[in-house]
Image (cartoon, rainbow, N blue to C red; front, top):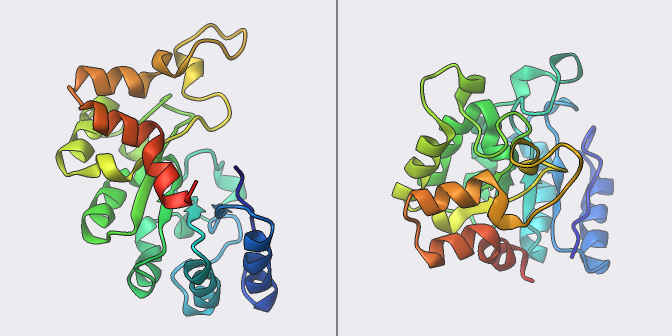
Length: 217
């Protein structure tokens, strides 16, 4: 299945609302990923609420990029990276799932707070930098990706984590650089879930069932 996108440089206006409806008409299952730092635009601004309202009405989850992960500073306004910017929309549209790409990267601790406070927050696990769960501020703090994953699991996050690859990650730190090889069992996240004693239900959720549930497939 696929998802569609709207103009993520300048998404305000009726044109984007019409595009949301067209995404549904095309049989696509969601929207994204949106890039507020590239626009730049504030995703919590009420002028974007008609987009979210239409997405909620049509049952189209949104994937959003609010982090520095994969965005070189010259091409992004870092003032629009923070996941907290989206909170007005999270509260206004509680039935609309928002999946934060790369677990919000260097703002993963803000995602942790939002996920506990808002039931429509999801985290997509992929990271070009770490090959799996990112760490706050690119490893500035002394905490490992595995420890972070444990914190999310301990807070009931297994129901709202979505495994992803982001092109070739997380394989490229695991396997030979000659190309994509192996299976899902060869990647870092799967190994760490086993090491942390995650249940079969938790693993199944993260590796596919959660995404199937929110995207309706």
